[in-house]
Each structure stands twice: as structure tokens, then as C-alpha cells.
Image (cartoon, rainbow, N blue to C red; front, side):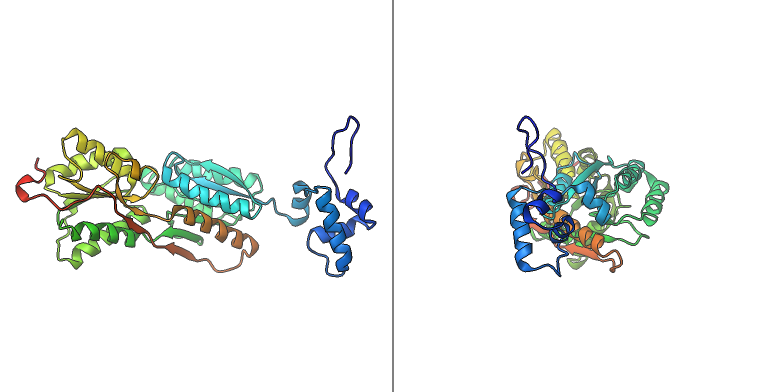
Length: 357
């Protein structure tokens, strides 16, 4: 192994390995890149053994010049303060490491303009591809959504959409089956005997929110329970929406609330505590995501578990496949959520003891 003056160990190069193995540098390069079809097995094994003994680490800059790839991918968060997205990012990062890819992470803070800036930034770093969790579109309006659609439609870098669908673009999409999730949450409450079930949604311009609401309506229809739009409060996937939505729904003779995210459910818990409403005695509550906060709520939260880390891992796998074969057909990859029962649901109270304004 090369030693500089003063005893400092220098990085091993292909030329060092070639000199030790008694072969040309080009032969070593072919072996280390797996392009050694015409080289004898004995020579290949000797080169690989010497490279290992000398702790050879490929020069990624040089490799990038040859392969035209940086072995770096990007991830654009919609909101890095939300535990749900953090857990999903863990899956992306672990799979990237497994395939020897570096990961650059950006946060768009639920803003379309910041999302497009992040795409430009990642492309300027010559990444091989990126995963994007689009912002909740109600924050920016349809005009801003069209800006993001145009940006992605003209993007030359491979990408995958994670969690929130965007229409009118050709892309790979990885998400949970949100209609099934809405079905499971509502079915659980109906089987307990609830018929006055309030909903606090995310933005209904969001594909996932619309699908969860479709699952909610499907269960009501199956059980002959009339759909009452007055029991649906449209908000965002945020605690403040849960608080405001609960205050709007409490006077409407509800016995349960289906919150479209665990963050929303936290806001419902806060409103219930202020109003002296007991969960689950006076009000049953189901969240969505099963983020790390769900079992830590004041009343451990019954919720719909999305396979967050799996979604992150799968998005990374799909992106790497897209990088290797940009011409392959685009697909949706949809995975089932499951109901996680904890302590926030019970049978509805008798009519005379239900929540009144």
C-alpha cells in the first residue's frame, strides 16, 4: 500500500494494484468493473485479492465520468416535521445504502414553488434520479399545481411519486391503498355501533384524501347509513385542522370521528380535552398512518397503519429500476394498510349521554 512521507497512508489506485499483480492498469479496471470476460479466472482472482488486501476504494468521480452516473439519488419531503414522512424516508435511505447510493434530502414545506426549486437543485447536482412526495395542493392552489405538473412533465431525470398522486403526468407511483384504509377505519366504528361518524379530512384536492372519503362512504352505503356532508370537515393533515374540525363537529350529535391523519387526531384530542369530552367514553376516535406518535397519545390511538418504511423502500427500488431502464412502462405500486386497535374506541354512549352543543 502506498506510504507518503511522514508515514501517512495514501489511497490505493488502479495503477498500484496493477503493479502488484503484474498486469496492465486497463486489465485491473476491467476486472473491478465486472467487464473481464476474456481474462482468465486465475488473473481475476489475483487482482480481486490484491484489491481487497490494499483496501481499494473506487474513485467515485472517475467512475461517474466513465458510467455517466453519480450513484446519488434525491428525496423531496413534503413536510419533514411530520413523523409519517420521516419514517417513510428511513425506508428510502436504507435501500439506497443497500445499493451503494448516496441520498440527498430536501424539504419543500408543503409548497409547490419550493418543490420545483428542489428539483432544479437536485438536477444541478447531476443526481441519477429522485423521489418526490408532492405538497398538499390546497396550500398553493391549482395554478401552482400546474407549475409542478409542467416541471415534472419536462424533467429529463428519472423520478418516482411517493404517497400523493399527481394527475396528467407519466410517472411511477408508490402509495398505500387509501380507499381500503378509509373502509377499514369506518367499518371498525360501524361494527361498534356508531352511525353518526364525523370525518376530518386532508385537502380534498389530494388524491389520498378523496380515496379515504370514498372508503368512508362505501361503508356507510353498505350498512344503509345516509351520507351527511355536514359531518365532513375539510382541512389539512395538521393538528390545527383536527382541533378546528372537532370544534365544528362536536355540536352535531356525533359519537365518533375518523381523522384522516394521526396529526389531525392529536388536534381532536386537544379539542376534546378542552371541552370535557372523554375519549373513548364520549367519543370514539380513529386516526390514520400509525406514526410514532399514535401509541403515545394521552389515549393510545386506534389508527390505520400505512406500511411507511415498505413504501419508502419500494419507491427506492422502483427508482433504481427506472434508472437502469428508463424506457420501461410506468406503473402504480399500491400496498394494503391495516387497522391497529388500541384504546381510543368503544361502543357509543346512550342517546341521552351523547355529545350535544
